[in-house]
Length: 287
Image 1 (tube, rainbow, N blue to C red):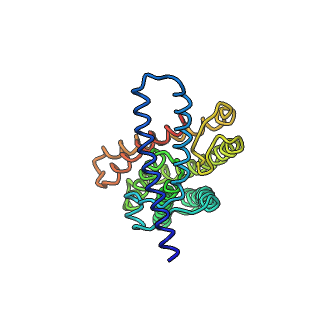
Image 2 (image 1 turned 135 degrees about the vertical axis):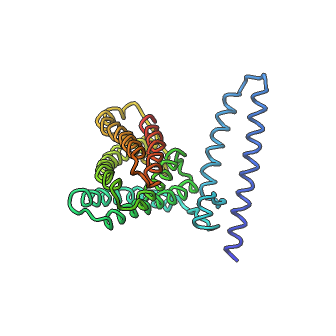
Image 3 (image 1 turned 120 degrees about the horizontal axis):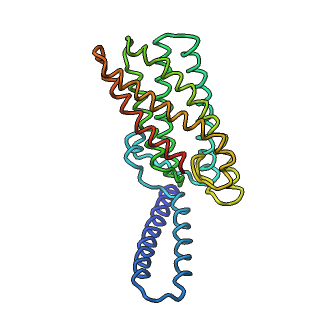
């Protein structure tokens, strides 16, 4: 009985917020058409504060899952009911990324320099598929709980999931061996850069939160201030070198695709996956 009453209250609150949003939109349109300038600035500021309050309230109300979450989890309510639980889940997401980055670094180092077995390569690529799939699910849940994750960031992880899946299905052969060490070396370097990037961005985000300029549910990929250049100048060469390496990987695969002995469809698929990954990650630098 309590659960039903609680659900009704949540639905009633969601409906009230939707009506208030509609009125705010109508008021905005009327202000645009109005020739009166007195107190318009105050009204617009009040409207922005109200819209922000609605955003905060909606973060604690159940909402319909998006297409991706509906396919993966069904119609399960993933909304967390208090700020502590939301922040704990976001913090767990950040720790998960850091932990898997270290694991992937060690795994790629082992495959590249110590052990050369196709089974280990398959396990490594399966770990990549699982990692990026898990990231997309966790990020969708964070978005449902008010985290302002950019679409390009999630899209990059979809592309990475597809790329890892293609590498997982690439059969043993001459072309696979030609690209194997280059791909593993790139993953080794990428894990190292992600480790540096995590600590730089988490430090920036911690300072912004302390100054009250960022939301508690923002990730370590959000926001930029002028004082961040001091640390970014150290990180930029590593980032750009990684993107040029991606471009080199794409060029290598394109040349392999033109070889007469190239029969595997994975060569073309991996090549096409690197280019959108480059563009989406470059936008991360420029934000």
